[in-house]
Image: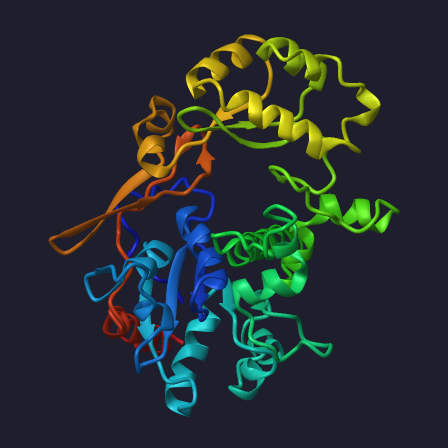
Amino acid sequence: MEFNEGAPASVAASLPLDGIVVLDLSQFLAGPSAALRLADLGAKVIKVERRAGGDAGRSLELAGQRFGDASTLFHTINRNKESYAADLKDPAERAQVEALVRGADVVIHNFRPGVMDRLGLGYARIAELNPRIVYAGVSGYGDTGPWRDRPGQDLLVQALSGITTLSGDRDQAPTPTALAIVDMSAGAQLAIGILSLLVRRGVTGRGGRVDVSLIDTAIDLQFEPLTVFLNGGGAPERGEVRNANVYLPAPYGIYDTADGHIALAMMPIDTLGTVIGNDRLAAWPAAQWLGERDAIKAEIAAHLATGTSAHWLALLDAAGLWVAPVLDWPALIAEPGFQALDAIQTITSGTETMRTTRSPIRIDGHRLEAPRAAPMLGEANVRIDSELRHAEGQR
């Protein structure tokens, strides 16, 4: 079966995944974000949703914001897709989805372990319908083990995996990142797995299955400090002052200035002391930079608080040291460096427009753009059902 309509005009036929058809049965963030990346790269993504309410992300509002018939979050993660509404528990409608599977290249889901099998859409059945299919699943904790049926939610996985014990100073409570980093990273890992199987299929003709879990992703995100711990580095202990990495010496961290904040990365303490005019830092023995990092950071903090951000940035930049201003979003968006990135696009739904991010990937030197908003629930049903009937009639 071929799907001939629905691709936005801005998606060029030369994009890497032009001609690839993806069925996205997932919801919320991790699975839909993987499908979004494939759509940005030229794939045709058909989002298969429940008839009653669709993807739960449609109603997941941040700051009460909505765009058209759904939340802005839903449009951010599901732009440039089509929507096909179906009740997977209804045999007739599941048969329609199976017909879609026969003409697809990729199926993505994030149901809990066992649910797809109970629905009659497990890997064995999907591969029977289409041996060349790439079957991609994302779960909270994998298919086995005592955590298998726990709720797979980003904050909960951050807490369970140890991520929250790495941020903040020693006297603070465990601190989560303020972004859904596990969900988004799991989506990226799933997209990598999908693309690798598409490459293998191009060579051998054989499809396959890729599975990613949030917990595996969260553990992998910590590969640097966790590897240190696993090889005798000792249990991670947050610093008392300006903690930013549990195993790195001073000055690594963020510091107050007289009018803002600056971030200091890896650099020799003696060089830093010389550049900013602090004799104590300039004379601090290198062998003590890790063991006495809290004392060193306290000295740095007291000294930097006496001058403005611009003053310190000018000195440190001129010396070639690794430093950056700490920007909030209004300041970031006003920066010429941000404007040069061309990182924001406008998506359109009817007469409404909404600004959001665009894919960070560049293909052949060009940044990807997909201005079509997320679809209304079931928007493509009539056309797709007609195409299915036409394809059936040609068999």
